[in-house]
Image (cartoon, rainbow, N blue to C red; front, side):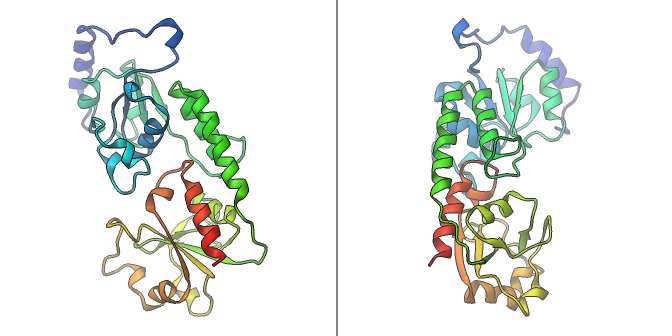
Length: 282
């Protein structure tokens, strides 16, 4: 939103004189009917919950390989996360995780447009804020589709309950083509735990894969995400180009994960959990 200038505010004023969007029937006032989504994390929830006639536009990334709902995004109009482009559509709700930059939420609210923000997730399950079920219901409620949210939570928890929990102490290491991994405190860590593994990376936060540790210790399973996609692939300085890193991909059990399963926090992480649990048993 660095391009937001006085022009944007003049545009708001000008648009206000062009007439407002049709007011919904009184019984439908809780359901927005002119939704604009600004980034692919927000796209997932809009495409999952909103009826097609509720959606004005989604982000250009909605059809990319790292978008879980990419098939549903085909044919839906797109918009850049730029103030002028969004305002001209006269939305009655903007949905975003990061789209438009750090000042986007405050700007659109000043323009009189409600904003629904995709919250941070740090737990696979639970009732507290930060859990996937809590986020699912928050987004469904905000889109006027509360019952769809409850149904998805029920399906999510049923699938999670069916995941076999092993008690053999196997470890798993999450790896990306750029040589990144993560330890406790991340949703990826919670994903590994939910699949029945211990996280091989025991240091909190995101970091490079532990090349030195590979010299004397290896994970039982490598959870490999994004390797099938042409995004985040290694350059000449990437840790993934080191022989000991390549050896993990050759010698250990590798469970390939679609990048879309872990790119954003959402119900789709259950696909990754199921794949890991099944792959770890092979």
